[in-house]
Image (spheres, rainbow, N blue to C red):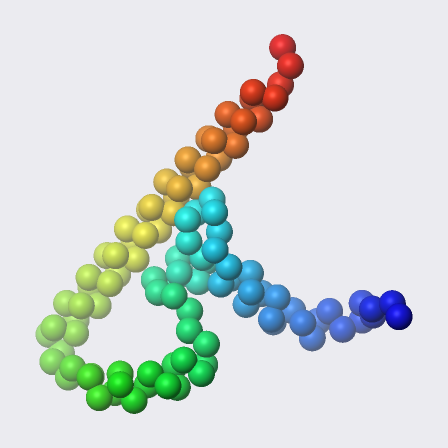
Length: 103
């Protein structure tokens, strides 16, 4: 039986999720990690850990703001690191390609 190509739009959401959460060698991390600064968790994992997160919630506003600023700084450092990783990866590919060129 030949698979039908008519239902591609029904699978698009899952395909994009898989693409965004897959590890990308050129940048050294997943797109999800690059965007949000943390690993993605499935809804089951979030529901299971939500009780512990609520229990350990710290209501101190000043330390929360400081932590948030630090997380933003770490995220920016990760983005810069991904740019460096992508540049290194492209340089290696160019070097391999240039070796294959016949003079």
